[in-house]
Image (cartoon, rainbow, N blue to C red; front, top):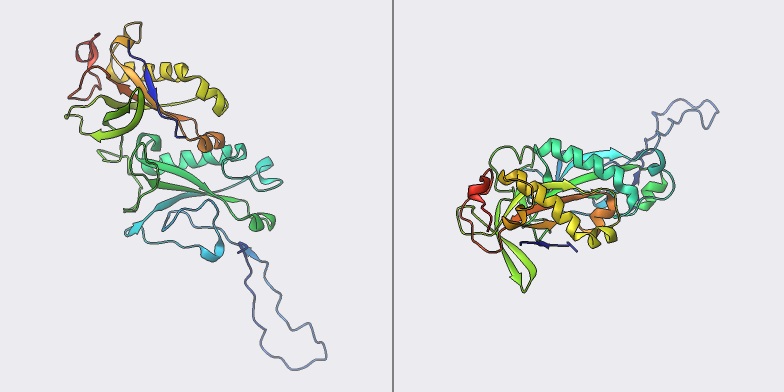
Length: 295
């Protein structure tokens, strides 16, 4: 019976625009009434639909920079939102804190709309950037959603790319996870080597499920439950019965978010069909019982 492998991925921002002096008038004996009123200070807010040369968790106005998306860049700002209600009160939320859950949910939705699908299904990572603490104290309540391409399912470090990610998951795209040949060290997963589905392989991406609200520690203790959720996705993907015979057809590999992402509210768990005792040479999508037989 096949079981599972799992990878636990383990200056102030306030800028003031000062007006110059009003045109000189003839002296009237009043030293103050001829000066123009100063405009209210404008808080810095980063742009959306802009590409970025670097990724940072905190965006400083003094070092803020965008680049042309047609050129090389590291990330793309897909949305700038605003903290409201209790999230806007008190101290600024810290990166990786539960107070960012609402912001991450908004970022997730905007990213899906922009790229045309679930970013979890591709070599992409979603990060939240915040104003500095000094800007927060001055009234800044924005957050920025940054989407970046990554090297692989195992190495989620952003890599430079050329071109916007808008519509990136529409149609056939090399960003989407497909087939892999897992490399093991003993019984432990080392990394997933991507291959063409027509080449010999032992794993294939089948989808993503959203885990219920539980702590990171609880999820880490509940590997069998995550395996079971992935097996249901595998059965639907391969068009085979989700019954007692399923573990004799395939096992699972699953990738949860990192602990920091989890605490922020990302609960998307990536699931892969795993064939530990035979090489596959085609996609198992819709393969049916004959294509993925009981062994």
